[in-house]
Image (cartoon, rainbow, N blue to C red; front, side):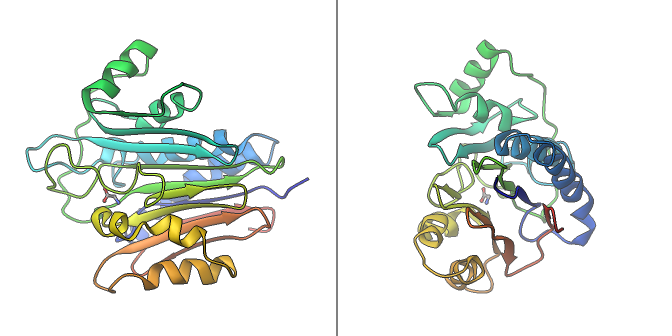
Length: 257
Ligand code: GLY
């Protein structure tokens, strides 16, 4: 049996005052993993809690676009090769669940009004998301986990960076830059989406050799220190870690933590 673990983050650039929601998320995920539940259920429960926390930039606390709208991105993927990704969806407090709804569909990425129309057809809750005017804490929430069967999962969610144009998409819902998962490693990024996307961050970290610490350090080293960036990861051989060049609310749960 594999030792279950979960890592959650509340976004690069956030300070310790935003830690409680991240701890609550990790505790909820660990409650699922420690009683035999799946990594997928654990990351979904964790990210839902962070989407419901108004101080974090995802779901309810999603930062506003230049036109005042709140458009949200989220993604979910598993180490057995499933993907769901939602981009620039509106009126959806928990986009991570809509993304999860795509895991077993013949299509895996939906954007904008099409994403919301599909969510309506499937019965996902629709409600105005007030969002946040905060100019700080521009970033994402994310979680990676491994369960006792060795299945890994990753989930990410964001309102994007404050003041970006309507329709803009950052790294968070993109497999490659914003997250990566295979049979060996699960990764999620946080930071300025344009920079992370150009660097194809998570994929470049995934193909590195070395310890998880060395791989995450390599990923952070790709960026000028003035650019906020962070990474969380879990490996199938039992490593779990988060690292950033700025403040990063982080919570790790396993049998030893
Ligand atoms: N990393 C979140 C974004 O840039 O949208």
